[in-house]
Every structure is written in structure tokens, then in C-alpha cells.
Image (cartoon, rainbow, N blue to C red):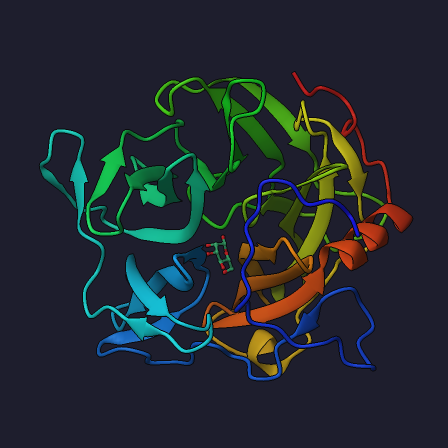
Amino acid sequence: MTKILGEQNIPNLPWEEKPENCPGPIWRYSGNPVINRHPVDKIARIFNSGVIYKDGKFIGVFRAETIASLPHLRMGYSDDGINWKIDDHEINFVDEDGKPYRPYYAYDPRLVKVEDAYYIIWCTEFYGPALGIARTYDFKTFVRLENPLLPFNRNGVLFPRKVNGMYKLISRVSDNGHTPFGDIFISESPDMRYWGRHRHVMEKGGNGWWQGLKIGGGPAPIEIEDGWLMFYHGVINNCNGYVYSIGGVILDKDEPSIVKYRCKYYLMTPEAPYEEVGFVPNVCFPCTSLVDKKTGRIAIYYGAADTYLALAFTTVDEVVKYIKENHEGIGRDADLGR
Ligand code: BMA
């Protein structure tokens, strides 16, 4: 089995074996969607969301959209990662000086444990879309830190540990709207406050068209013996609009701005009815991958059609093999990117 570093044992990770007729390396949970429309009073949809395993249970930081279509973050709790009890209120942040802080909007949260703290990184309003970041130790007090990067920016993802003594943050430079471009960049910080040494990680494009318009980070990278296994989203623009698929890449362990292997095929693309039909059709948007270190099983939580939270499965062995066997070097991906 591919050696997995830095992850935990999750004996109750949601899981189903691969069905026989599955064409790709990722398969959908047969009970999808995990969270359906109108899960809580005055909430129309929950989709692109962060999930973490803590003390034998699952904690979610959800992208929830009100019935006025305003996105905000709210928490949920689950014993099995499938049945969720969702808060009836949004997360209340405080600033570092203890004053209440309420982002005008907040969406696409990633939830990452780094050292003994849990970080939420989301898209926030900062004279345009930019990355917001907050820290919690207990999921009761959420301290919003100052925005790490300049606008316009989205899809911020922290690495789960320091690399060469520095915290690492993936991001995707964007515009003020639905961004018809975008590559993945990485920045580093000694203290989660000052971010610099920005480098280019990987570019849109390649021989196939599925990631030809833009790409963006997904769940926090998983540390394996070959480097950092990372799922991301790739977007094609067709006659009906954008289509979001899930891609896979392995970044260099010590210098993650270098791509080692990148899969030329998508790992999963909208094909199920709940991915093809919804508030925004044809979207698979992964924000979480939970790994059971003992078995190598991976559960991926992804937003489906900007309407549902859905779940898919793979194993570290299967997906790493697939990425390596179908590697495509794209543009200057293998460079340091500075
Ligand atoms: C992106 C983000 C995501 C969303 C996707 C598809 O720009 O806003 O939250 O899932 O578009 O609408």
C-alpha cells in the first residue's frame, strides 16, 4: 500500500466498495446526496463544504445559502459522516481583538487541522472576493485572522503541516465575477500572518479540454510517500456554461510548487442527476478529502450542482496509480514557478 504520512485512523469513515460498472478511479456514494435541499429553516442549499474528523466524530463547516441566496458558513455535527445535525445559526466570528466580525458573504470553506488548531479558509468580501481565514481550537470560538492575500482571490487551501518550516497556502487568483481564467499558486508564511514567496504551481490547459478554462484548489493535500496528493477542480466552458470536474495531482514533498504527476483525465465529472441538474448545473466541486491511514480509504465530500453535498470514494493506492499511469506534463508545471 502507498505509505500515507501525517493522517489519522478513521475507523468509522463513510465507505462503500467500488461498484463493478464504475469507469473511473472515484465512485459515488449510493445514498447521495448526503445533504438535500432545504436542510434547515430558511436555508435553501448546502454544498461546497469542509468536513473534519475529531474525537471519533465528524464536524462540518458548511457553505449554506439562505432563501435570499446569500452564502454564509454554519456548522454541523455527525457520528457517521452521513447523517448531519446542522446548526440553526451561522458561525459567529470574532476579530483578534475580540470584537464580533461578520463577513458580508462567505463561501467554499476548507477546514484544515494544522498543528493543534483548526483553520477555516473561505472566500470572503474584501473590496471584492478574497480569502478569509479563521482559527478555532474548540469549534466554539472562531477567531478571524486578517485576510492573508490581496483581492481578487478564491479557493484558498492550507497544507496540513509546515513544509521546510513554512505554512503553505494554495490559492487561485481570480476576478470580481465568474472568472474565465485561472491557475493555482502557492504562498508561504512563518506565522500565518505574513504571506510571501508566491509561486506558480500548475496551469490550466493540457491536451484535453476539461481543465482548459481554469483550475482551482480543492481539499487540503494528503501527504504520501511520493509527495502531496491533491484533488482540485478543472473547468471547461461549453455552449451551456461552465462544467466543473475533479482532477488529481501529486506535488513535490519539499517544494510543492513543483508538479510531479498530473492526471490528464478528470477523475470524476458531472454524470449523476444531482450533479447535472440544480441551481448551477454540471458542477462537482470537492472541498474535503478524509483519509483512513490504516486502510488507505478516502472519502471525498463535494458540492453537486451548487445544490447538494455529496460523497465519493477512492483509495490512495487506486488514485495514485491512476494519476501516475496517466501523467501529463503541462506547460511549466514542473518548474519552481517563481
Ligand atoms: C465558482 C464558485 C463555486 C461554485 C462554482 C460553480 O466560481 O463560486 O462556489 O460552486 O463557481 O457555480
